[in-house]
Amino acid sequence: MSTTKIKICGLRRLEDTTYVNNYKPDYVGFVFAKSKRQVTKELAEILKNELDPAIIRVGVFVNQPLDWVADLVNRDIINYAQLHGDEDHEYITKLRSSISSNVIGADRDRKTGIIKAVRVQEELDIDRANSYDCDYILLDTYSVECEGGNGKTFDWSMIKKMNKPFFLAGGINETNVLQAIQTVKPYGIDASSGLETDGYKDVGKIRNFVEKIREYTEK
Image 1 (tube, rainbow, N blue to C red):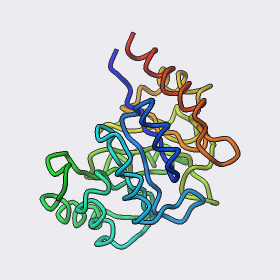
Image 2: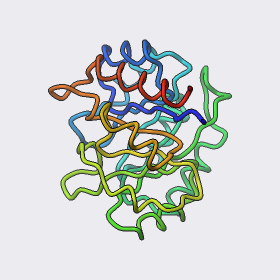
Image 3: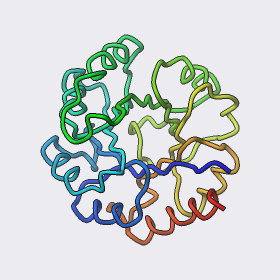
Image 4: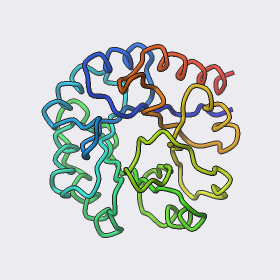
C-alpha cells in the first residue's frame, strides 16, 4: 500500500512548529489569505526557520497578487503556492514562470510548484479540477462563508477520476481519516480545523492523526 501524504494546514504559533517537528507530517501550510489562521510574511519566515527542513512548506492564497505570491516562493519561505480563490489558467501559467528558476536559500534544489484548490459542490467541479495545469489538486468542501477550513466534509462519491495527484480536504480529522483514505485513495490528506481545540492546534489530535495514517498506510 502506498503511503498517504499528510498535510497539516494553518500553522501560526511557535508551538505549532514544535508539534509538527515531533510528528513530521510531509507538508505544512501557512495561510496568507484572510482567515483566523492568517500569518504575515514575517511570521511565516520565523515559523519556517523553526521547522524541520524535511517538511515541505505550502502557502495558502486567495486571489492575491501574483508577484507577492511568487516572492514568498523565491525567498524560500514556502515551497508550494496553494491557490484557493478564482485564480485562472493564465494566473497559474504566469506564476509557474515566475517561480521556476528563481529560488534562493537553503532549499534552492527542492522542487517548487503549485497546488490548485477546488471547492466541490457537484461533479462538474471534478472536471474543472482536472483541467488545471498544476502539480497537485486539493479538493475541499464548498462553502459560501469561507474558502476553506470550515470543518465540513463533502460527498466523496463525486470523486470519480482524477488525472493528477490530489489532496483531500474538508472536515478531515482523526475519527474519519481512515474512511477517507479507504474511500477516496488520495495522494494526500489535508487537515486544519479537525486538528484544533478551541481554535488552536492540539498536539494530541496531531499525534493521533499522524500515527493513525502511518500505521494504516505503512503496514
